Image 1 (cartoon, helix red, strand yellow):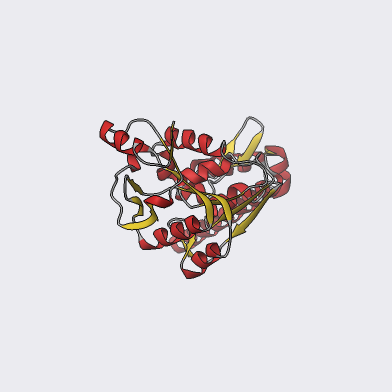
Image 2 (spheres, one colour; image 1 turned 60 degrees about the vertical axis):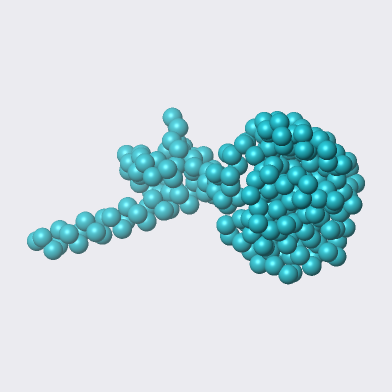
Length: 267
């Protein structure tokens, strides 16, 4: 009897699991649905549907309402990957993105790298079209691919899952063969008097290729990036045309920055 009872429990568990999977499929197809509609779709009682919804809500698969339920929207791959990075200096990044967007005019060809600051800039370009955007960043593709009036060129190459961008010789060579009016570059470090640096060789190579293909090179970096550590040179100091940064830098850094020939926009 004990063996028979246990087998029955496992069978009922499999039935419940299969039914809940079917419930999730119904919500995926129909969006928010009432309990009565779900009962008909599953051919079960209202009490059974409500128990299943309670179970699915507990594991954050659905959100219940007075009349029914809907699926919990999962964050996109970009949002999940950049979740922590985008919160660092978030307000500063938004101010930088706004100032950078003011430099963009319809008809331009612009290059955007794979940093979180340029990602925020991408969200502000949706009403700037027509534009042509060159990028190696999946975050930029996610933001701008659905937007009418924006033409995207994506380099391809080796995908870095941790950064959601393409690197390697193919990606670098693609930028060398292209031309942009402005390259917006979010760097790991801007050392005043020396140039821009990245924390890894792959990123430095792509940023350097983007800088080389552009008429104007604009560095978008909050004040914590000024004179921060960086191991790999990506943009020589004499190639920088503009730096958009934020208030909060030490006076010594500000004074040194003022002596640089490139344009400074402090937001």
